[in-house]
Length: 190
Ligand SMILES: Nc1ncnc2c1ncn2[C@@H]1O[C@H](COP(=O)(O)OP(=O)(O)O)[C@@H](O)[C@H]1O
Image 1: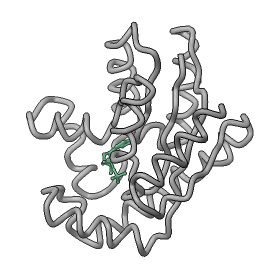
Image 2: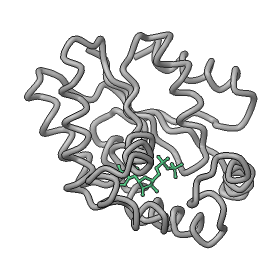
Image 3: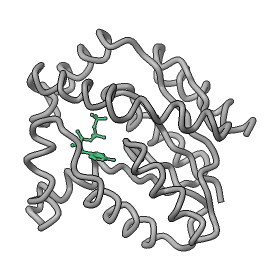
């Protein structure tokens, strides 16, 4: 089983690249952002718990997110592997994943970060906000909160995975195809 964690700031292109990578490597794509948005749209209990945080650009509490993620993983017992997109986003979540995966005889294979400058990313998000309907993409203030959340809570994961020799970085600026190629070459050399 191969488990890849796609890592990057909001707007870095995780979702776009995940679409290609899941096909190429036959992986199950789990995007916590997408799962939350699905629950918001359908007004489920989970959606109700997540809405305030998401709308403000804050992280949803870890217990809620981790329970949801584990539920999703368990739905795919026969998969060739997972492509985690948007999870883990805190050290607490990374530890939870490292504790959970061995219970299904697995572990994180590698973390790949898509890197890009904040200015480029904020512009991308505002552009996406024009069509995505996402409340958190339409307001520069909320985007700023997401970057703050990233810097405070998510960035420390770089050190966490470096210590395990599982961290790889890829330049996230270029055409979609170029970036897919860069990611593919990292995965092929794992
Ligand atoms: N692992 C997570 N832990 C807590 N909250 C999360 C997590 N993943 C997604 N969310 C919530 O869903 C929102 C949107 O997620 P996503 O689409 O992945 O964001 P982005 O485009 O900012 O990377 C986040 O701002 C957060 O509120």
